[in-house]
Length: 232
Image (cartoon, rainbow, N blue to C red; front, side, top):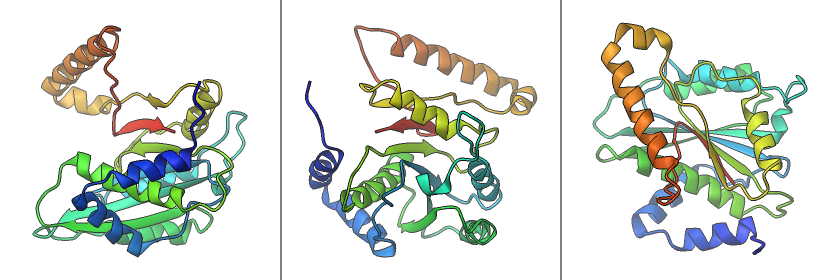
């Protein structure tokens, strides 16, 4: 079996970026260029577009994370990167200020915020790619890579996040050394389904089709949810 180096693989990947992605990455790195900390084992990536009403509560859930024994998770072992993005013609909301308020209220938390203004509305794929590339570049710049770092992709309006969310992801990778990526549950609140039955029907239909595709061994098509997935 091949033994891969996370930093070498990241360097190779970054060398393949097109000019647009390289320019986007350069603009983000200019805002924050410190490498990922030596003690960090998990980086949570959260894109935020007009999420002033949600981002504080989402970050609060991460501040309450525990290990599988019920102990408070050491905040030095994970960082959260919030990517505040919007279009040039949009009116900026208070997302940035809400992040700063959370950072002031929780100085022990490892929070990094970057922002980008796009000329036109980008796809969520481009937004998440830019965010991931930013983290990759900071991982590449680490002086010492003692262990693989897990990247968790999540949303800015996440609710009902389990207190052992990060610990469970870490444990899953630890106990499955050949595992490259995992995806978790993605669903709407029960109240939303109650108020909008059509939403419930379409979401369950999509989940059924997704399950059929993912369990077709001949197709072997991987399916990761940007709103709840992790890779290393």
